[in-house]
Length: 302
Image 1 (spheres, rainbow, N blue to C red):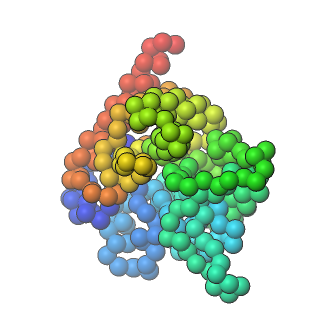
Image 2 (cartoon, rainbow, N blue to C red; image 1 turned 60 degrees about the vertical axis):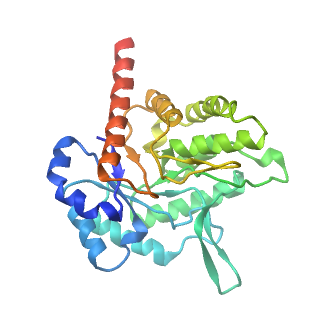
């Protein structure tokens, strides 16, 4: 079975069912790294218990890998300590910036995942920060594509790089891997088409086509994990809120992704309006079904 995001409402229930879920094929649990930075306490004790049954993936939301002021060493050291304790199967964070300076002595954290420009200067900075993190952790990390609601306007359009090319170059130069969030690709495509004043009826079809092209442009050997989640369609913008089941269009993109990349570990993310544990497990089981169906079909046609 695919993995699920392990959130606080399901800590106790999942541990109670751990033996059964092991045998049912639950592949891994993913947690937000920053929730377990304390030296001890109940949260870390629960994570350690979960690690006895399942591989743990540490997914960060606070490193700000694209921040021009560099990496917060306190944050990185906490992550390194947690990784040493938990021995995670993967460590990941986002291709974004989060940290900046108010003065020569005061730095701030935006507490958000803010988009970076896709240009050579930004790429060079991101590569250096990712390499620094990997040197400290003594392992490769996976970097996730972002759902972004604002974009940078390049003064020189010739400097702008396409996101898949940018991410491929990051993985090649930094020696990292990529965490491909399929839902994020679709959310960005829908928002881009809405900005071009397409009708709502036209957007999904055109968005799916551009998303497939995005996936086809990513090098196969760079991808370490997929994320699947739900999103919210507002009147003016689509929000990656992780608050509902995966929609049909994202499942279609996931099929395309499996057809290109093969059997990649897959996570069901759900962070708002968290449902009963059984709903997450149903989504994970369906991801397994989709993967098996695509792979079997591919094998039969060879």
